[in-house]
Image (tube, rainbow, N blue to C red; front, side, top):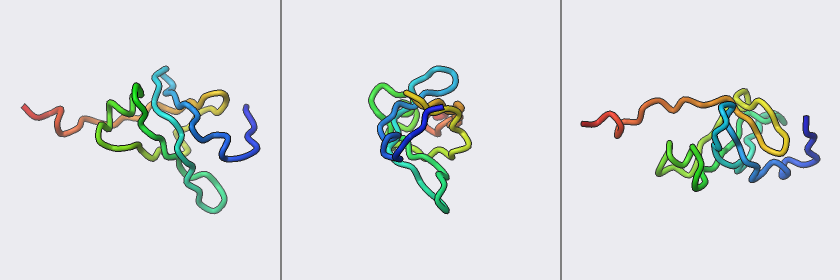
Length: 89
């Protein structure tokens, strides 16, 4: 397991799903009582997140979905459900 000296070491790291898709990049950590509660992931061009959220700049993912930290970050694949524009006829 990678050890980080500073939280800033994680910023801009690439995030991949456990199924191998490039998800996005870490923008910031959201803390609660000196612990990481969740992570703000930014949608970057070419990422799975950019195709799923289209107009949003990113999403907030709870820390419990994060599986591994190293040269990259692995998260459990997140289900966004079906958006309303995909169901319109």
